[in-house]
Length: 299
Image (cartoon, rainbow, N blue to C red; front, side, top):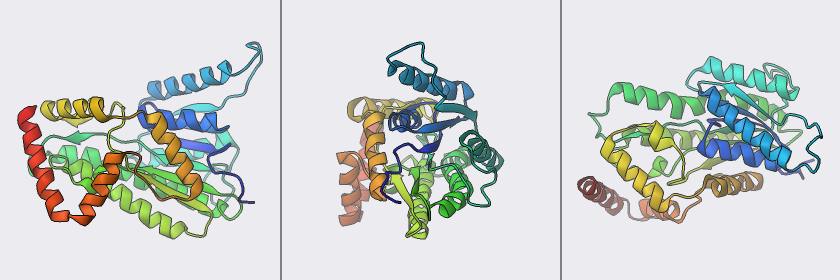
């Protein structure tokens, strides 16, 4: 009953699927034989992802005249709003053939990726505006809370018969506590704590929970976020120098989910920060502060 990998042939919902890591998740899920609802606050970007998927599927077919079934759908969703996420779940059930509301456990959804996120930073605590705090928390933390709140009960009931999973995209920022990133750090720390709590609650239910905690991945998050000019320039340079492709990160994360692995730290620097923070907390904090000041002068 539990021999099949979760990521193979999954009916999946991915938030923030209009670009970056979310788009990479959607493409890889379909490569693994699945179907995906691509949710994004920007419906045009979500549709671009769907078009890429359908082009990919069509390209694999020997005969261009063959008719193939849809494997991806675009849905507009603001994850900071609970009603939007509830509507997303019901729309996904209609697409995949499940039961709206999921109250009887007859969900057709196998995998949920809570990926939608925004970047914020560049100012110290006390200078970051409350509006920026609320905006960042609304997407990065409430978005994950809403996703888990809506989808976890459905998957918990299904897990007894078929393994399923939840992936929450956090960040190395969830434990690195880098200066001038307070709102972002807080939201990602919350997403990681929620993932750890949910993993404990789901133990033995047939539902795997995985938290992705990367450092720099080549995405639009710095470009689309609320980050001041100097910090944005520094972040873009770091992304250029050390950023990795989202494709590899996504493959590693889906494989980890299949194995029941909670944490995914896909890059060496993420794993080094994880260990340094725990082995030398005081030295790490002082070093992070000094490095931030040096970087601020350089950029």
